[in-house]
Image 1 (cartoon, rainbow, N blue to C red):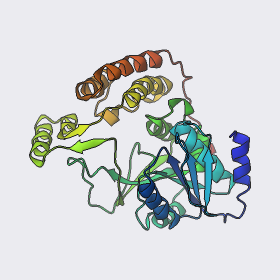
Image 2 (cartoon, rainbow, N blue to C red; image 1 turned 60 degrees about the vertical axis):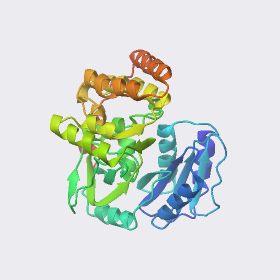
Image 3 (tube, one colour; image 1 turned 90 degrees about the horizontal axis):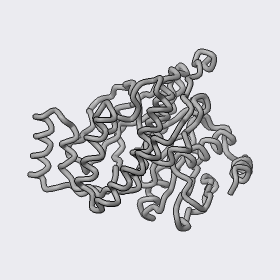
Length: 328
């Protein structure tokens, strides 16, 4: 399917009422039951849902006039999929898009709350997002608060993003394919002068990766040790993790790419790994990934290939547009 085909799909959806917020889900070989629950939770709260399918085999999407299904019949990556969803929503007259992972359940009432906040906003907010935790990780907990705070970055799942802001900063970066897409996008938003607001009375339970929590006693030991040594990475040993060589490759490649691309705006994405420099990234991501890997040779190869491809990437340095000419 070409961009022109996607454009025609969008243009054909003229029955859509011009509401503020649409939703988008990116698929990749989803669990059927969990995916259906995700769809149900979203359709309760939005006028229209755009689904981009990156799956390696066909996925059944229930026929529904509120759903637009898009696919290229191959895995085009998360950034390409998100851009496709945003373009379709823009064509259909929406101004904001709530993006969801295929296995996330949208808290009831969250979209309505975000919509009220959008109406009261001065136009400088690019994203409204909830707190996000992974309940399987015992060291993660949500703050009990009704406050709204400004944050430097957020994940795309359950984030409500302004289409105007997305256009202004240059969309999502297709080259990244999967990892660090949200870090790159959020850094460009902040550098432009946009705000990212976390609404703390909403909490999304999001599963990050394939992990199995260790025994309660073992979890307590590692979490306590991390607190004593003031090193958050140690708490990650409270669970067993499947280390994906593919994700290790893209993380190593992209961490170099985004820091070259956004060099003028300070370090990018290191906060994901509780570090501030590339040396810290090696210590907090590469070494633990190799030690915990089930396929150590493949992971080592992925690290080396990722570094090599990252060093051979030569992105143009990104320049921030002036927000004062955009917001009226």
